Image (cartoon, rainbow, N blue to C red):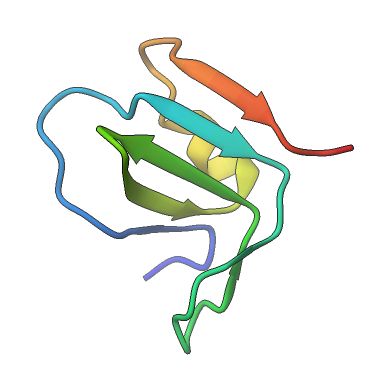
Length: 69
């Protein structure tokens, strides 16, 4: 699987509710311990990966929160 994106849950045809970018997220996954972005749908993580990869998922112009400060 790509190091840029990995899916953590199967979701319906709709996109995620929110995407959070430019963060530092510990995933507890041995092969991919850190992610910089994640997508949430109905309160559940549905994807983790690099910011650029998750921004490509934003086909319906959902909310994106930039965590960079």
